[in-house]
Length: 541
Image (cartoon, rainbow, N blue to C red):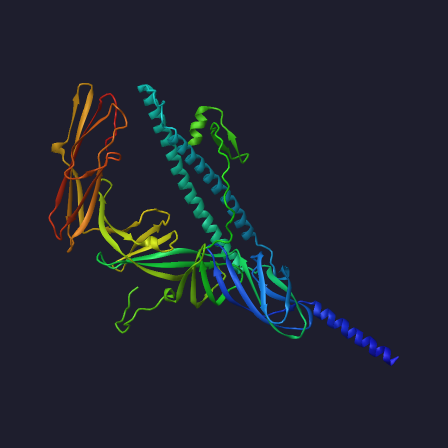
């Protein structure tokens, strides 16, 4: 009997040990590296665990709920074999969404639907304008065009293109308001979600070991709620110095887990974007039918009458004791160009909290050659604007982004760096300079209005005066224009434009010259006449 009890106890101990081995073994891991993409981020974790002989399930707990399961990879160091990797949620830590969160999510969905609709309409108008412009040719190679047909076609092109342009302006204004609303609601939702705990993720790695030993297990995975956006600080000390361009990354994340003292790597890649090559399908032409939007039924409907169709288309140091400037993270950043992307490897650790807020990381500093020129269109604005004409910017792997402008140590405003331009010289406005005084005055004694037979002839004369009150010489460019006739009954005569370069296509006049320091006014004359039937009205101002 005693032997039986001992045997049963031994069997029970074996069963308990087997059940203990079946239960996943938690592993304490450290977040070691984070690669932040333009959208999304890849996280790497490593931990040490003791493995008994046989099969063991190792679980990484309290991970972000925003893990993309297909991105998970596992590796390790030690005498063991990785059998499988499993992603799962721990719902014991989840909370029900609040009414405020649900309302914000519903609002964002509706705003996004409106944005998609407006964007779609904008695309239709753009395509229609392109179609009109692509079909301007009248008649054939050996066939003339009647004057009336030409006039009718010109009227149609002008009217329709004007309508399309006005509609596009309205859509842009609407999209701006919608995007602002979306951004406000999205920021509020991000803040609320950061405060509430969600269901956490777990990654279970099943391993097999022949011996009992310590093992190092590593995982990396992609999360969707993070990324970075580029921005720039452009600084000009004076008009005789090169431009300093500070390349910055605005890093954000709301993954549910803080990134504490981790090594950051920034990548220009976007793993959430499709990598499939595009396929060019046949292009079939058909007749265009305008649509209006039925808000009640929430679907587009074809118009019936022509009238409805027309409507539907419409910091400085305070004390001298500091003799050196503080360093930035740019000097700890190494730029690496891979086959398809550019990576910025930052050697100092960073902490990025899971609150959705932007954390600015300076990644590169460039010194770019620049020339400076003043620019003014006195017909539109009497102030002169200082332009920095930057060369060499296209050598660097820059992305589209907002630019903060500083001149002579003072913040002068914002601009936008559009890296899609094909020009090798980038023009950046550094703001207004009140020391350049420019006037455009109508010379009444040389201007007149008179009737000539069935026509009315008006003569306009303007004096453009430029004065430099600065202590150094400047380069300046002044632009004005002659009107261009779009009707055979309107005749424009160019009378005088003292030394200006003239563009026949645009009617633009350009004066480009140097102006010495503290100069007296330099003057230019612009004079022209317009003759048109006196029974009609032409807007000339």
